[in-house]
Image 1 (cartoon, rainbow, N blue to C red):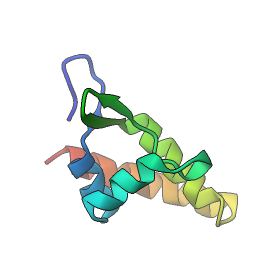
Image 2 (image 1 turned 135 degrees about the horizontal axis):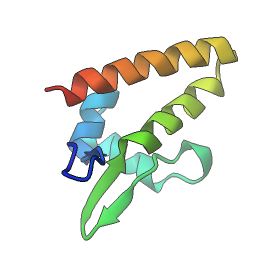
Image 3 (image 1 turned 90 degrees about the vertical axis):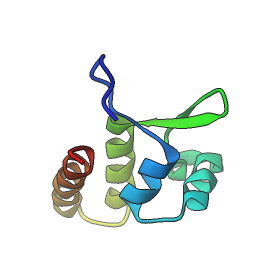
Image 4 (image 1 turned 30 degrees about the vertical axis):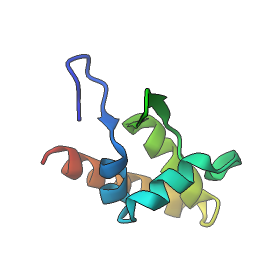
Length: 88
């Protein structure tokens, strides 16, 4: 997931596993508009997601529904989950 340049790129399958959703939900999220859209980009026919963008997106999703302290705690937990996921 981390390439030689230090960029952590996630595939659709990685995102689905991380978010605990079906792959189809990740594809659906890339087609949404506005803040709900999962941030990613296409490399040919393949979608890729930068870990930093995903962390920001997750925090924005969380903070829209919870007080800032709770969002920060959730952000710390998400970072923990991503580190654990990337350590595989």
